[in-house]
Image (cartoon, rainbow, N blue to C red):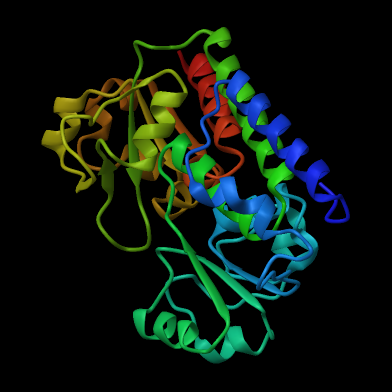
Length: 305
């Protein structure tokens, strides 16, 4: 929506957009969205157009580009490798081990970071620097993805782009049941990072959410969060399919490495070598590609079933 529109025209456009969202079953959940048009008007007090954004968090960066705001991004963290343009941006380090000097050297006028960004001392310094610093929660369900899209689009005066993106996600979500679902398949997500012990994803995790979106069942729904992988837990879960990330598969030593984990070979998934690996940002990022990830997992499960 052009900032040169007259106030009546801008108000009329906002009403039309509101009606469009209501008719589509999309609830406008945040007051930020409702006031965004007024805050972005040419004569709005304190109006700010950010032109140099540092984005910390792969899903946040994906959202900025999906909102067609990538031209404002001057630096990102190492988890931000999609789209290709984001991969080529200057990097300020891993999101949990940032440095104040590294970020300030990019001369940002806005820093947007996930709530996983750290260390805490650096976050405190950045917030005290006088720059605009915004934190977004890490999403693990589709509703939170939509909230983050709306928060970013309001912050950047790109509300129309945000609502278009929300509507596209809603439409993609509505098409998922049309594909039919391997609803009887039990999927166990195993996380293997570095030299630490493998972990499995229970309820209230992003892995559990993407499994449910794909139409399958999480084999470890009986507990919440991540728990260490044990032969007893595997035998109790009896997964039909084991899901992991490409990085986790590599760090485990490939397919044979996953199958060699204690207890895996005794499960239905292990006996059938039903192992699926996907890109970690796509699978667990919960950004604009969330439904794309669920669709891809659904297709993998159909092929494995």
